[in-house]
Image (cartoon, rainbow, N blue to C red; front, side):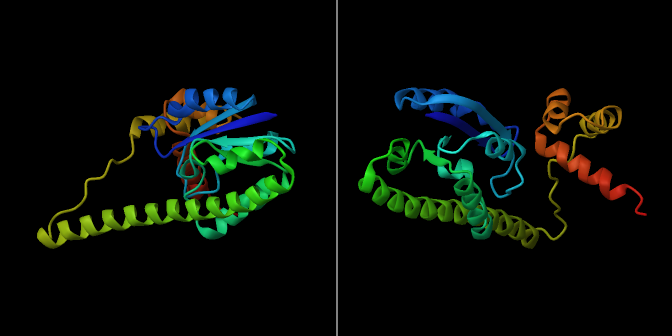
Length: 212
């Protein structure tokens, strides 16, 4: 059976390829043939992920999507999670999570036992996806509370933030202008930024463009 490995990290400071070796080893142990490896630096809270969409377009019915853990695939809202599951089901793909043993049985057809395990696995996937989303929401809330506490302690305090790298943003804008047909992934590699940054620059350009 063919497998499509999906790796994701939230920012370029993290390493989306960190789990590549372990997923390759996992696939080998399970007798899977790796058909593609899709890696991107983007938030798990958004469904608009170029590499994930490319994977879904390339994969064929009966093949597997292999992820390290559920939170690498989804920190989505309930509605977006249901949308992603529907896309996966419509393509006839099997979702295998390395750290979720019940999903490993989806690699093989096991008759009625396999059908029962598929139901159990689906319930566990939903539970873990919900936990991933709630963990993200709690993290955001803690950051907000921390900022609010600093403002209360010092009304004059303002967060510095990382800010955008002006030089890199200018380079991205130049690449977009010179090579309008170039993919966001290629621009990101040339500018040494995450693909999410390229999309932010594109959105800024579109917003600034005159409307007719």
